[in-house]
Image 1 (cartoon, rainbow, N blue to C red):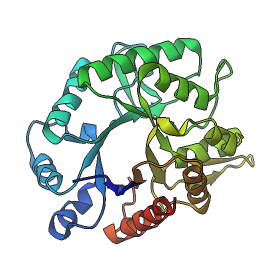
Image 2: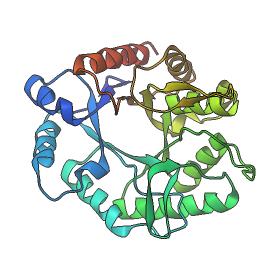
Image 3: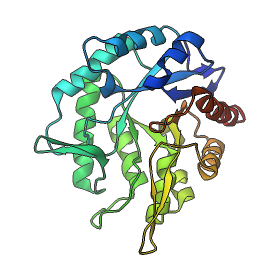
Image 4: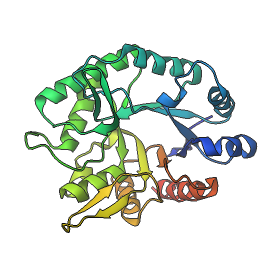
Length: 279
């Protein structure tokens, strides 16, 4: 089981419950599958047995949403140990989390909340990433978030914050191009400047997904990262631009709500593989 064809990275698909039977019965020609770590923290159950079966034929990646790496609260050590147990059971080739926080004073929020890009929050992230990587015995990939606002007291650009954080900790970047596009549109960033600032050698994974466009009564608009539709033309263009810049890595088609038939995901994955192969 490999995640490259020759020297070309392969495309994966997020493994979701409606597709378990299809994947086991049909063994589709896909490079790998991503799972959300927290969905498999149970000790036993059908989902784990399904994953045991699928792991025999495909590499896996673990994508977490609950570590809250940006929180000043002490990290949940039991949460980290559960991720380590999954590592021991499934030996995923990638393990990732988010540049965000979701816990304060022991209270968890059901969202990936934004952080101010300051020296203080940088230190918090670096400390927490170092701890997790030490326990897991391997590097984490950190995903750039989708954002709908910016903090006035941020002293660093997001792209510089993320790149410098990975250089300091030895972590790598999970570059979510849909998130870059959503954040750039919402916050009036120059997308090309963002992508040009990312050291290609730090990028170990790419995410592609869909989003929604919302209009409000006051005339304002917002792009919402929903993972509920096909990848838009603009994000495909960013993918092509990134590849030409030398950013080429295992790439995921991410679709989490309004999940379509597996064949639709395969079409998206086939198109993404065409881009990667054209490098």
